[in-house]
Image 1 (cartoon, rainbow, N blue to C red):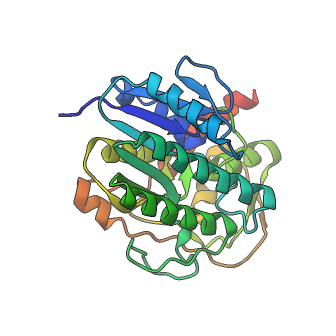
Image 2 (cartoon, rainbow, N blue to C red):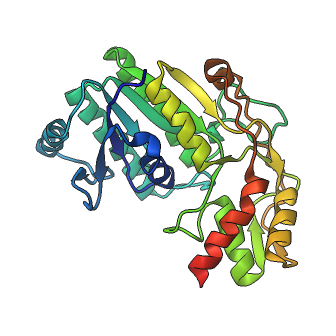
Length: 307
């Protein structure tokens, strides 16, 4: 039987967080948000990416406690600066992410939640080998974004072990889905937006590159398993199979009824192949790669936004 929980969201405005918080599965949970701009009663204004003073951290911790309703609390860290494909983060992003992790751990130290969930990335694995990476394989982050994610994983893991807090690290693969705040951002959103508006799309790698896409809705479904079940440790969250960029382009051309101009920035192959057997053995769930089936609905949503 599922028990109601206080779920504290660090980073309300991320696309993945927005989809998660809007899920009807949260109807019985008590959601508390740390966000830069307060808009709901359970919103707590907090600039996580700034170096907060001890008094500020104590104040925000007290406000969180005042909003508790249940025995168990789950802290989920969504907040992050930068994007997975960003090769080199500027100094500002490095500092912001260090502050985010520091503030998160400081608040966690004061409140000692029942469980921590950290949204990490499969970009920690090598993307130039045609093999499937499992959680026990060596990591090989090739961007500042993924290097900082790995540092954060280790810091949060050390903290959780020291304080006997249950920890789940979700290494999430390339995510897609529609968000009306960011019609021109996100992998599939960006391509559809550019296809509709400009008749061309930009590829950072070759058409033969294979990506292990997973939808926002599938990620949300996975997160609930880690909240409701005693799943701890590091898990890859992705679809069963990767799909070539060329296949996606063909579907975008079919849906938009346009012959697109393809601007290829780099001919290098990018292969994102993720072994998700650990998640399947724990939950019985295998996520299908549904990106082709979802392109048409995302396209219709973007057309509404453009009009």
